[in-house]
Image 1 (tube, rainbow, N blue to C red):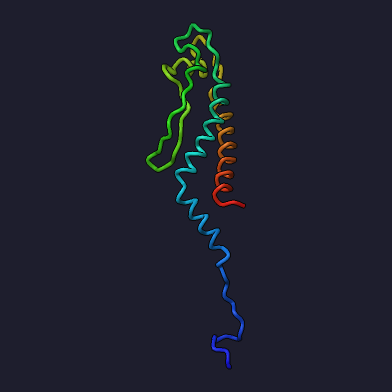
Image 2 (image 1 turned 90 degrees about the vertical axis):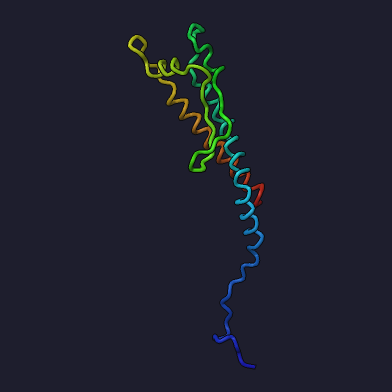
Length: 143
């Protein structure tokens, strides 16, 4: 019988059936995006907060802020108007004293600490979030 495929007898079709399971797992990741984002952000904030606190200046007890390290807080999960999820590290009460220490005043020389605290906390958060994201993908897709 003659070849009815209309070509020279070679089949150039590609069988993607072996990728069906992987495609379904990747689609599952999309469905779990909010859950994964919450987990990754939580890992980041857990790593960042101690690094930030370690850089907060220790007061002498005479300032109205009290012990600044005790007043570091973490916000709940927030969503920006663009859909970005985030959490904030901040302080309870009057923050002006801490900024005066960082920037200095006419009678107090500056003792910069905020940029260092942000940098160290940010790097710790990025590392922890990266590891958690890899772990979440591994748990949901496998290797």
